[in-house]
Image 1: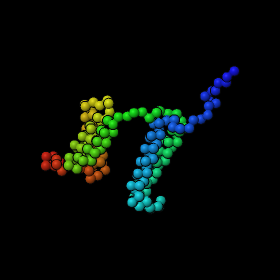
Image 2: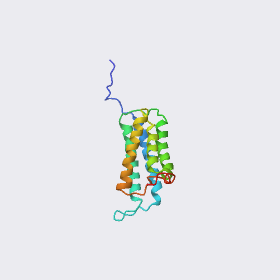
Image 3: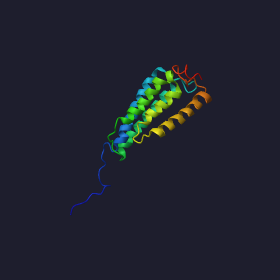
Image 4: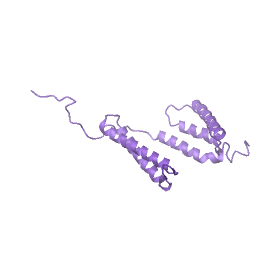
Length: 168
């Protein structure tokens, strides 16, 4: 008579059991190491007198530790496989950030905000022109009220190219 082995009797398999978690963990570890390296020139200080580098370095370590936790979890718990992904999302999200950075000074928040949000919203397969435009205008209005009016930050609402046309 042959013996059947139940799932509990099998030896545990060592290896990657959740490709998605493993990949995300490696990315977070790399991001944490990079951020910690970039913050090395900032003075860390002490707990009594914190320096400019205390928060960025602490956050970098926490991100890397979280990534390590994901890697360890991916080796112990079954999860989703790492699936194929397209470059569309990354292109439009990163492109929106770059677009904002390039247009904030010459055009101001009133133009660069909606432009960047509208561009970034094209990352979704469910992109709709009308909804994206409404969202961009409402969120830009909230940003102007928050950053310029309430917090009084020196962010240009109207940029240098638009000042002669819109003198606010």
